Length: 359
Image (cartoon, rainbow, N blue to C red):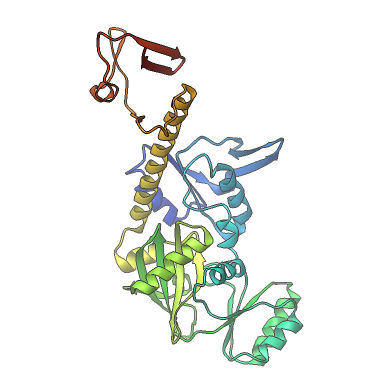
């Protein structure tokens, strides 16, 4: 099977590619910046370095929020031709905090109370009623960037004025007191494969590793694991990171990350997360490939006039054994068909197809 990882070439992506090589026959590293998608003329063309992209059994695409439209275009074009762990719409939902929170709300996943206003004036009216401190966030951003904290109405109001002058959209969110601690969880499929507790450095409220936070391995309870897995499902991702705060109200999701860094959590937990991702991709791709083969075999039977829904019809996938220009059928075929050397048979032949039945 052939696989490709589309990314910006981060260290985490390089690790994942090396692990994928243990499972797939071929693994290509594709630079997201060198891909273009051509729309029109009744078809979509995905080009890499100016040429049509090769066909793969598995494509794992990831990248920052700045490339969300391109990622959705790429995955939307390839989603039905190969296995992909992230649905096309996930790149829009997962890279936008407002859309993420709307998905969480829809699936009843616990999260801090979040406020959206149509204008700065409307936002200030909200700020007059909330408890402080409060968090202000850009809808897009990673590694804790674009997250601000206001401890009073006046400071929050000043931040809003600055955001208005920059024409920068924002969200307001209830502040959850955790003493600068959050939980980073890696979800693969329907399982949590690694989790770490991150502690912010002194004077910093953000616990992100890129903001100086320190990580240590952390054991989640069953409820928190379920919340993390449900979060991944809500945005359409089989592989992602989920950030959780554990406050007095219990675990609350603050973010989902479609392209998480692996260095911090690998060092903190000692778990080879890249290998777990690679193995999952292989197993899911293998399952899809086998399903496609069965579907193709079913179509061949149907083209020959056999309906595979018939009670006595069975499908057998095997290699041909050709001896002296004769095809030797596996024993199991005759065991099922119960042919007899004395019986006449009818053989219908077409290119790539043979159908045998008793007269």
